[in-house]
Image 1 (tube, helix red, strand yellow):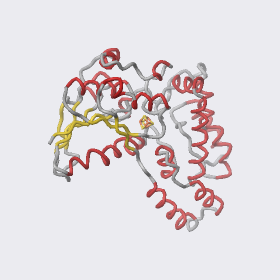
Image 2 (spheres, rainbow, N blue to C red; image 1 turned 180 degrees about the vertical axis):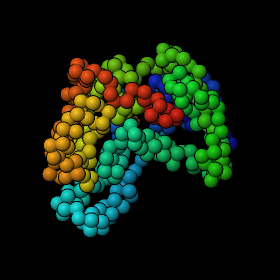
Image 3 (cartoon, rainbow, N blue to C red; image 1 turned 120 degrees about the vertical axis):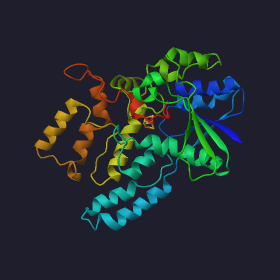
Image 4 (cartoon, rainbow, N blue to C red; image 1 turned 90 degrees about the vertical axis):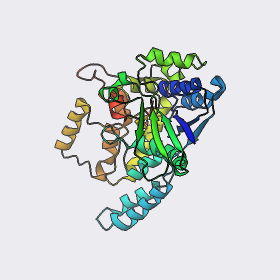
Length: 333
Ligand code: SF4
């Protein structure tokens, strides 16, 4: 039996892909991964898709890191003290290292850090693996053929230019079924054409695009632009507060005592400050430096920087070419 699975994120590309699946006229399932880092408007857009289009209701899947966190607790108890980590740091980590039920936060608590452009484990752990674990693999285990619909466009990047519209993957060779990917938007040239596909099914763009956001798969995405971060702060300050709370929790859960939602290394201004901080004797691995480091380079500092536009600060130094960093699956779009 053949199963068509459309991954939906609430963004323009996956919504258009869902609409293309409706146009094909045969049954399909739509699946979304709840990262715990989406804006309410995105949940709303996903949850109402079937009402507007007459297509299937989107099924949510959600990663659970309870076991990983339990194992990390045992590791900390058994190893940190033995390796000379001060007792108060061990206690602080154990105090916060408990599952919260929010996949994004729990992933970061488990890893002891936030994802970054260079270590973008969020897409895999929060989107690709849960959909694979709860939907794709169980179907393939029955010997079925699964066609995964992906909303990527060749025009978006050099990498995507070389993708095929239909392709067999050997990624699940351990299972009896056959796994294919189908990319119905691959040759769609413009973003306007993408929106037009959804509009002919009565679906208006996710409300967040109206606020000037380019990507809505997470809110914000770790790869968002400087301008987008400023927009998030201006219109949705509660999201910045949430990230500030997350930074505190993840910082307390990790041995070095600080972890920030956005990496500072891509920004020359912050690099300069960071170098000066280290040159003045600051030790990024010392808990004594936890508070100043966190406040100086955390989300609040990034928001302030995002509001600036001069003195070398005018670049969008968070990653702009999202498509090359986010993998060819388009799972975040
Ligand atoms: S949208 Fe951004 S933050 Fe969310 S999983 Fe994808 S890359 Fe990570």
